[in-house]
Structures are given as C-alpha cells and as structure tokens.
Length: 330
Image (cartoon, rainbow, N blue to C red; front, side, top):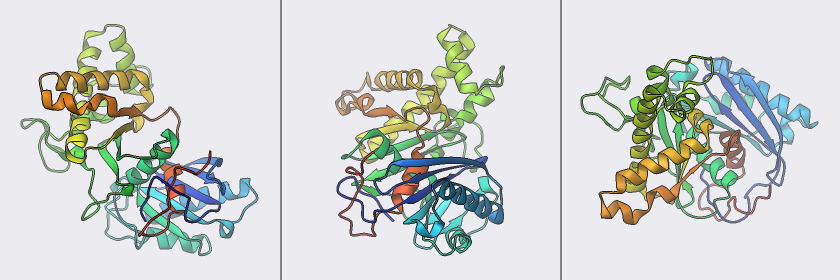
C-alpha cells in the first residue's frame, strides 16, 4: 500500500480506519466521498487476542451506527506501532501493545473476525502522515509527520508515496544520538533525541502538579515567567527544532507537521519550535536559505489524522499509482 497526493481515489466506498495505541483505539468511518461520518474510541486490550478483539469492537460499533455490516465496507485500515509488513498484515515488535514477537498476522486475524473483509495494516505514523496531508489540504510536496509523544518518530510521505525504508524503520529519528554524554536510551544507545524532544522528557523533568498533561503545564508556567518551566520548555523546543532540521536536511520535505500528544499545546508549541528553528539557522547562511521555519505546521487540535489516514489507505490501489487524495471531498 502506498499513497499519492493528486487524482481520484482508486477504490471508492465506505471504509474504516483505526489507530491502535497503547491505551486507546480511535476509529473513523468514511463514506464514499471520504467524509467522516462516525467516530469511536474504545480502550485498548493488550496482547494479540486483545488487540484483535478491541479492533473488531471498534469496527462493529462504527458500522452499527450507520446501519452497515463489515461486509458493506470497502476495507478496514489499521495503524499500529511497531514494524509492519503491509503486504501480509504482519506486525513485529509492537511492544506498546504487548505484541513483542515477529510477523504476528494481525491483519489476517482481524479479517477473519470481520467475515473476510479486506484489512490493511500499516505503521501508525505512516497513516498519520497520510491523514495529516488530507486534513491540512496538502496536495503537493513531500511531508513529514513528526510525532511528539511518548517517543519521537516521523512518518514520511515522499513523492506522494509512503516511505517505509528497507526494514520499515524509516523516520525513526528519535534514536539519532543528540547528546553524546546523555543517559542511556532503552534502545541501548546514549543520549537519543527522543530523551529530549518527547512528551516523556517533559514528564520526567516536570511531574504533573494538577493532573493535566505535564507539557501543557510547562508551557503555561513558562508563559507566566516560571524560570524552571522556561528552562524545561526551551530545552525541549531546541531538541524538537533539531528533529525538524534533521528531517529537512535528510529528506528536504516541504512540510513538517507537528503531531502526537504534545501537539495539543497548539500555537504556543508551533511558535516556540519555529522560533528555535530560526535561532538555530541564524548563524548559517546555508540553513537560512532553506527557510526551514516556514515549513513547520501543526495538526489542528482534535484532528484524527491517524485513523483518517488508515481509512484513506485502503482506498489506494497498489503501485503503480495514478490515484490519490487531493480531490477526495470533505
């Protein structure tokens, strides 16, 4: 499965998209014009059988709300963390879902539960990149969806096609070393970027004081002049700006879209990251010519980009492709 940004959808019809995360499954139902007609949220149940069961529950709930059966669908798209083989629906090392094994046949297992309806499985950040292009109205140019959440990674849409890489690890920039003397990362390296540019990094530096997400507390406190919050915010945005610069320098993407849980901060985050990007470029005529800060955008609050992207993905014909998303009406 791949995706392009121009033309008509290859497989019109109703489709479901699911974003299966460590705590929740978000789902959408798109009609034949790719309009979101229904949404659902169900708790994630971990392990292979648990994930298949909660995904089935989400699909049935979406269909029932519109008087449909799974067999009426064009297909079901599922975005999951971990390494994915889209040709088989196999998932490997999805440790956040307690699926640590290799090539677990998640797609076929869910298809069997749904009576044989087609199920496409894809990495969650890849479908988020496709959904972000749709939600933001991006119809040309390369796009990177930079997820700032528990970790840091990017989904890449290059030349209109999802770029997975040799073993499905394209966009894993969170594990690029950032501080040579930094702490050991769970991946085994030292000072990885995601130890500084993730929501988890803020959580560690500023335990929530009100029960609200720590990133929101930090940005609000920093705006009020709290010196500790300012230091935490500034260190965080410098690391995120480095991730943005890395994506532009390696892939020359036209659009870098900030997403993930920290993106719920909204415009204050966008302004801070853009400012840090400009600061980092100020001493380099080369970086200045790239106008990196102008490429940075943010996902609108509440936009379900990952499940939308998963639902769009099942409409796209296998390569070679001439179909795409720009004319799918909303």
